[in-house]
Image 1 (cartoon, rainbow, N blue to C red):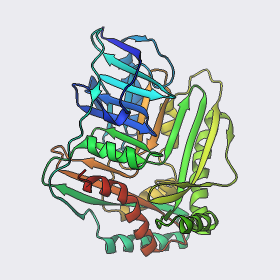
Image 2: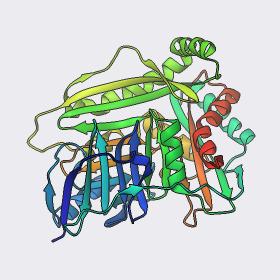
Image 3: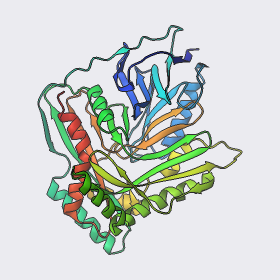
Image 4: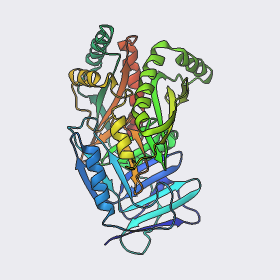
Length: 410
């Protein structure tokens, strides 16, 4: 039986995004210098279909049963860790990865978990390689004009009363003449977007500002974002833009649908929930969002509730699909002309206790197997007051983090 050992790292150590071992970086979940990164791969699998969350739970528990766990640190995120990246649509493959080595940091405490021998793996400073090669961006499934036409079609359906909101996504294709360095993308995103969760799972890389669900013991948290405005770069003007976003009827309407969908999904599992009356404005490097943090306490139940059950209930939320869900999903399939893959799906980590942090895979791209191309995504919530040109500008702003990360040659 393989041994899984977790022990505290004492003394000085490099920041998470610059740690190296003799194994390749395979997974990450970093925010503000804290989080988890994984190296190598002990086990991995794919799941698909309507029961994919239950199948993922079953596979994870089967792997845990084969491990002899020695955890001297304890707490959320310690011990064996499963990294997950679920597809938006159940018909597509979702990825599950258990790294050989996981390094974690939270609240000034650092730890290392590894599967195998008793000797702790070595930790060294990573010497970042400069990205080389020429990068080119080309259209994905739709050109800008074609996508605007699809937005206009969605607005018409909403005004006709077919639905209240739909989220339409688009993609771009980035091609590089040399292999793209995943660690460079992670390091760039972690440095420039410290308030987002920077993730890597099976070649899906991104910096999401949206937390689908966090479960820590019995406390549930979900951060909902809906309603966006692009920053100008001028601090005084951006304060004015933030005030206008907070008062925008179109954006408040979009946000309300998203918050309501999350609160309704959590209510069967929670004895109490807290839903703030109004959102706050979350400032990121390139955009601002209306944001609401919904919290709850799990019910006492004869059948323990874990994070897999919460993910299954929450996905897809109105923030990435629309309202009503089934109608919005049908319109997405009709209008987007592309396969979302794992974009806008649940992504994050789960520990042996069933706790974890799961975001929504936004501001993201998926690297090809040869690492020479990447498909990057963005999406916008469409409501009756949406304007196609404004939505195009918003989608371009949301593509900016991954575009800039790919273009950087430092």
